[in-house]
Amino acid sequence: MALWFDETYGGQIRFGLKLKRSIFHGKSEYQSVDVVETEVFGRALALEDAWMTSERDEAHYHEMIVHPALTVARRIERVLVIGGGDGGTVREVLRHAEVKHVTMVELDKMVVDACREHLPAFKVPWDDKRLTMRFEDGIAYLNNYKGELYDVILIDGSDPVGPAEGLYSSPFYESAKKCLTKDGVLVSQTESPIAMADDFARIVKTLRTSFKRAEPFFVPIPLYPSGMWSFTFASDALDPQAFDEARAKRIEDGARYYNRDIHRAAFAQPSFVRKLLG
Ligand code: SPD
Image (cartoon, rainbow, N blue to C red; front, side, top):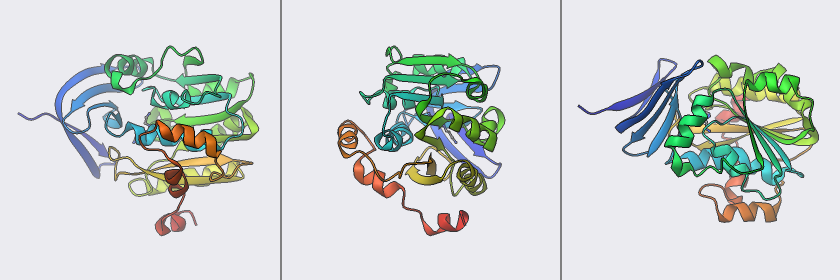
């Protein structure tokens, strides 16, 4: 009998992939963790039966959560990643030679352990000296943070339900802002403007109450409900289109999805999105 793995979103959308086999199944204190081998998307990670990332399209997500921020921010020495346990986001951050310290704060160690072992194709430089990993709640981490300010904060959380819900709230953005330099940049994943239109609009509007500008940008992620996904670039000082040409060119040369044309085009808002955001 054929083996399938489905994500059902909100009881109304289902996206399933035919599997070759299940590679890892675990239950942490927070969620179920699965690594599966699919026919079409390669190996993939699912948390609580929701697709998180796959070998086939992970570059779309990880290059785009990272490079628009890291090619626009003036300084990129200190970067904080909240979530992102599969390591794709820190891998892309570490491609920038100017980055001196990356801290990744991931709640669930089982996610990192499963991905380190079973997703080798992600080629995450887990042992890079610039990377510090902490297994704790990102909200508490930022609330208690007393260290040097970060130049860039990236929120690579799962959907805004369950353990990740607080990562999309006003108090969280306020405490993130206190840990960011004045001309720093925060980028968060902000859901689908089609499959989760209400969440998308609410999160972007919430970011706009904390930052002078918060501009969503769009990326096709075929693994996710509806396939159209968003991130939002938030900053008090910077224009998301004003990227450093030389830095962007360097990254583009080794990228699978990101390039300067994509950077410019990703911020164009379809008319239905303009309406959603009022
Ligand atoms: N619906 C899925 C939202 C997942 C966002 N995070 C994915 C983690 C990839 N590093």
